Image (cartoon, rainbow, N blue to C red; front, side, top):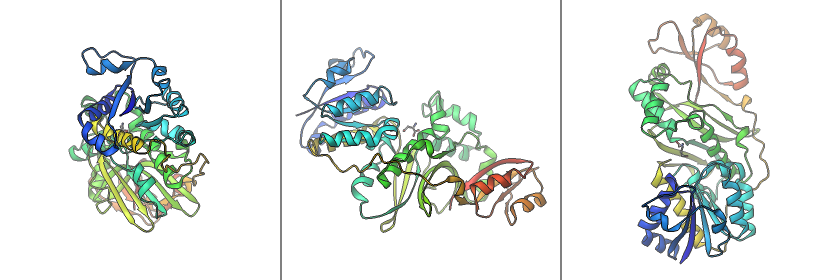
Amino acid sequence: MIKVAILGYGTVGSGVYQIIKENSKVVEKKSGEAIDIKYVLDLREFPGDPVEDVLVHDVNVILEDPEVEVVIEVMGGVNPAYDFVKSALEKGKSVCTSNKELVAAHGAELIKIAKSHNRNFLFEAAVGGGIPIIRPLNMHITADVIDEIEGILNGTTNYILSKMEKEGADFESTLKVAQDLGYAERNPEADVEGYDAVRKIAILASLAKEKTVNYEEVYTEGISKITADDFKYAKVMNRRIKLLGKCKNEDDGIMASVSPRLISVEHPLYHISGVTNGVLVRGNMVGDLVFVGSGAGKLPTASAVVSDVVDSVRHLNIATTVRWEDEHLEIADFSKSKKQFFVRATDDKATVEKVFGNVEYIDAGLDNEVGFITPVISEADFEKKAEELSGLITRIRIED
Ligand code: HSE
């Protein structure tokens, strides 16, 4: 019998509790031990909930109890989660977490502390919710150079974009529907401005490169400027607008970004709609691998957390091979990255061609503006040229 403790009885925490109870037989069979939830930490009371029997309000009860072998951190946010997790690891407990803010900010350090105690710091649920992607990167795709990772890594924004496309609706009203349905937070900034996705792509890039990619250095643009009219053009181009997290090996290093992209019908992530997430991993030998599933939600996320608990129990005193060093990985200069841009502007065609040369016009039937695709051009050159237009409405990057 292995004793575990859950830090946080919110959406994911209650899901973890439910899975360990409801799927106790399968979890025992897979891990080789029965799992007993000895404590649940939360500041709140839960009158009438069976969790009351194991509820504690002081983390030290858990940290000081040598019987607790695995701590499950599902509180979210960097503080106080970082202090709790670090202390638990230093006391020789394994930790499993769904907390991408914590992992993006302190992943390498926490892995190192865990290893020094022959314990594990595992975070399958931190990226892609229920989709297995961390373990495949660590344990399975180990014969390849990973050339590229592209992901639809945020369910909220994918829901909003899919709904805007389907209903011709604008961003603000769609966001409100998403909030009313509980898909988007009341404060939606982290999702819609790409701050959630950038942490996730930084984690994936760090695992692919085994060094630390600082998410704050990654170019990040969200979806709040995408409009219903943009989708009219996308339809004519037979493309969809997706918020893509990307990291790619290029000549001058690894290029990373989060931004809305126009992706074609042939793209492996074209059909990933609604709250679903999708991650494309491109290995130099295996080729393209695509991982698809629920990127958020109580039970899918909790399922990934409990899979880490099973892994921790299977490897109780063995540090498993999460390779991620704290050495900083310099990422390539995004302004040098080249691509085509789709542009909408109120300038006339003569001006457009004087600035950008040979463009491909897209007619979506909108009056008083032109839509066009530029030749392949660097980010920096695009910015310079765009300043020569007097009526730039928007621009969206075209994904190959
Ligand atoms: N807010 C996140 C999303 C939750 O919408 O994908 C999962 O990290």
